[in-house]
Amino acid sequence: MSGSSSTAGPATSTTGAANQQGWIGTPLRPPPLPWGWAAACLAFGWGAGSLFRLRQLTGVNVLDMFGFWCLVGAGLAAARFFTLLQVADGRRRLLDAVDQLPPGILRVALPAAHRGPAGRGGAEILLVGSNRAWVLGTLDLSAAARPRSARKQLRRACDLLQAGARSLGESLAAAGLAWPESLQPVLVLTRRPAGGPVLEHGCWQLNPEHLGRLVLQSAEAQGSPHVTERLTAWYAAAAAGKPPRPEDASDAAERRGRAGTPSRS
Image (tube, rainbow, N blue to C red; front, side, top):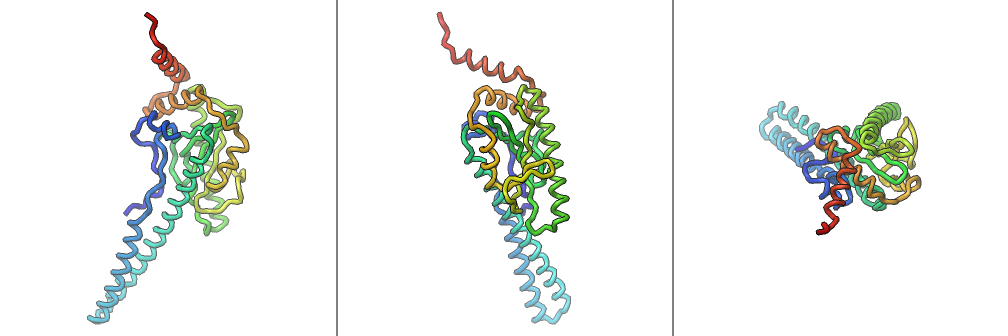
């Protein structure tokens, strides 16, 4: 029974293999459905019914208390199941929206060194267009949260995402990757409705369905082999824990060029 709601991140596959699937880095996957919590709910419910029945047969009153606590456990397990079910659906809708972007928008699954906590505003995905880039994080804030509590959580998540975007921007700049505008932090609300892309607390806030509207209206969907090579080199260095260097991408491109040029003898 797992209580984790985070999206699986980059693991062990190579960058080249990920590129064949449209990503730099290992493509993200939605979390599995929380069937363990459903099984726990059924087990608690069965336990409660058994204890109540045993109380009727034996007349031992204390069994009613244990049956009541089993009902409480069943309710908590059911609440957790439906929460994780909503989170998994939100992640799935986000990844579908990312996959539906034009091929010219580069998708980078951030390495562990730059990836924040999923569901709390941590940076997870980098989207790169020809003239700007976006850093995506998620927030699993419930639609039923009280307005005051929701504002606090939104502000906290935006602060975390902005800090991650600044750190990521510095790392990319050190690798020779920069855009006319600084990285745009985008907070994706997986469980709370948003009226569209809204700029608040220094972050764009939206639902997964609004991602294409935000990205496509402000970026030319044009691929750039130069940027792709630099991003691939940056990802490899970051995944290996090495400081990025601008010459890494140019060296890799030069080696590929030499390998593809036939020798003249």
